[in-house]
Length: 113
Image (cartoon, rainbow, N blue to C red; front, side, top):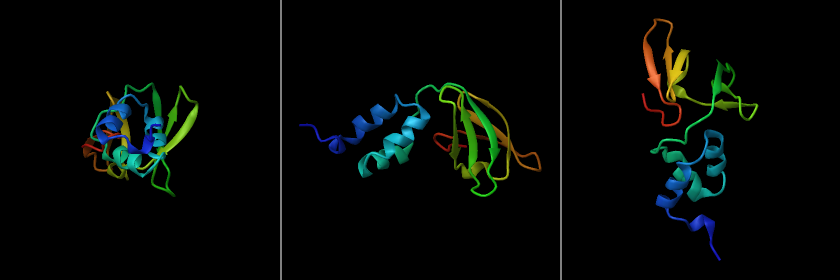
């Protein structure tokens, strides 16, 4: 019998490369080993379908997104975007500016700037 929590990190990383963003978080909820692989974020996520970017929630400081395929809202904490306005996106990267119009590109999946 296979013990799913004992899969190696290499196999788990390979599996996550096929997951859509919401499934990536569900994957991390399975067990501690899977969560640790999920948090590494050193791999690109699977191609995503269209998400709409909504405003930052003032209470939680999380950014809200709406997934057209799922018809669901997702709140995601992206500290690099706090206090910035998202102006556009391309190929998984978000472009945001602050009040002084200093721009930044952020990948919300890897947090790379």
